[in-house]
Length: 178
Image (cartoon, rainbow, N blue to C red; front, side):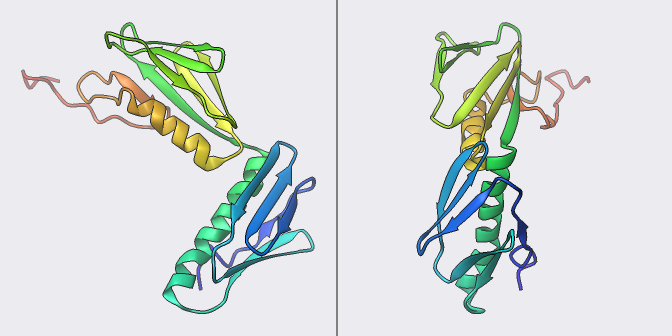
């Protein structure tokens, strides 16, 4: 039995889960999310608790059991609390600013980078810190990864865009000194 899949999901007040034959919709105070159901895995809602069960012990059903439970739990957490990723921009002359719904970045290139923020994700910029927030964990993580990919942190001086909890392992330069 999947250790993650067998855990029940407690549904907080103000959140409703609707289970159809092929989709699951979660509605809460921050918005609404939906996810397709995977074959061989069923989601049931009883007395404020959602449980995920599988049809059989086949390898395919076992692999989807924990995944489906985690996806439903992420939707419940997203519509109640939301998700946030924090990025730090390090480097001399590196600047970030919001222009409407676009993120403009000067990252040491000959041109300015303009990133169009997708629907459902909000950005906030404070000096050298970019906060990406939204109700979908997948969308927040994807936007944060795309912004980080413009200028990944380099190991010599640590310049670039990194996650706030990311640790950059530094290397010594040519001289071999620290």
